[in-house]
Length: 268
Image (tube, rainbow, N blue to C red; front, top):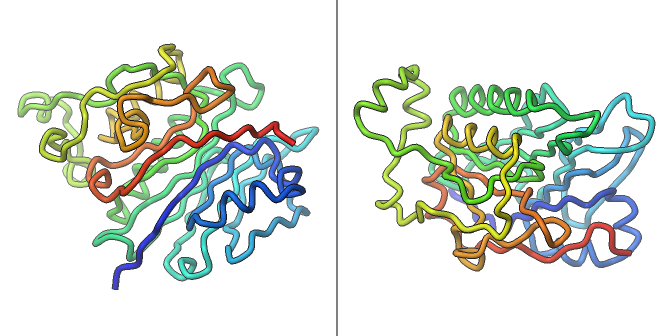
């Protein structure tokens, strides 16, 4: 039996406890089935709850002088029995699999990568995420959905490689990896090759994120789907696009809506 997930939401809340002192956040999230929060700023003593949701084991930043960073995910109670939480080797990606929503499992990665100049950040974080993603997607035979704040500016640069037989053979990918990350015909799936973005800037982290997409045949949903198609709305401080939804191309046909919601994590 397949279950239906109505809506997922990913927010950088810049401290979830302070936001829950006001009803706005919980009201905003009530209609969603999966809640992914980055910069949750929790420690192991904090208790955070949402009505009708189950909290997955959070990733809290260790060794910091003050609460910072962190990722926490909540799933609706009806969905929890279909969740498989995976081991996370870093505090930058919380991995879990949702079974029985499609004819194959979907690997979700809730991600938070600190800004490039942060003491807690390094471009090597992308290597760790790519390695873990590849391992779990191949071992579990999953499609992939990454959500979160990558602090990466990608502009409108291509996130895919035009494949032909020569390029495919030259890539020399392992046969099992090819099976999971086989390059697909975007036109056949009705996916726009060119995505839009109101943020035209590109930085080192953006180029590395685009390389991850190309390596693993994942596509950025921003600027391609529904209300955000041909827009690529700003996601942070009304000036940048650094929060993304990144998916296996085959998942695009299962998305019923996509929108960048206005949300100010610093609002009281």
